[in-house]
Image (cartoon, rainbow, N blue to C red; front, side, top):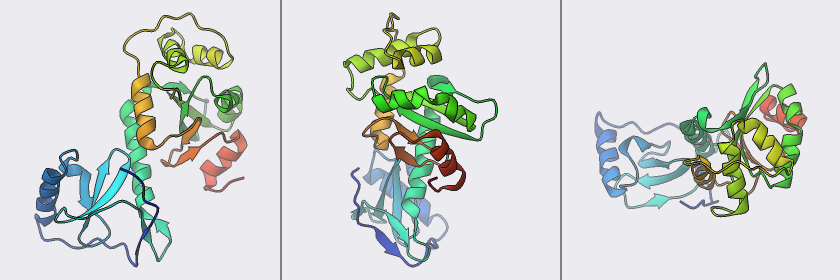
Length: 239
């Protein structure tokens, strides 16, 4: 689904009351109309007569009869809150959690205040800068979960390096050495989660690296210094 920047304005966020079973019937009907969406991914939206469709982290809205599809954001005009982005954030976290930490490369401090998920490319300059400063992030209590996102895509040199990192006996050390520019001699094994990480990044709208997903599900593009990121994670404000 493509994004549409034009917001939908509404005065209130009260969900329309539906008769018992009516919402379920509409969900089943819409699931038949949109076979790529399961019924549980179709829920009433804050706007009466409009239902939310969720495919991974992507959100769209459809009329109850399935005729009209709306791609855009719902904004609560009374609070200026972006209702759609809040739903997207939750969906991002769910999609990342589906990967599972066993299929990520995790660097953790002794005391964790926040956990971020970072899409990284071993050849990316700002990814290397972030990793060189990893101790500063850990000192701020920021736990870093890496997902491998070689920007060149499959069959690129970066993709091979990412798979070599994953196939190493010590992935954390291999990632560090690879980001230093060291040449790994590890043989590529199969399967690796690189394709899964890459596909997830594309679905989330990652266009460059590093791309940080916060513990509230917000997607923050680009490098952010440790101190500034810590303040943002604590307060939602830039330092």
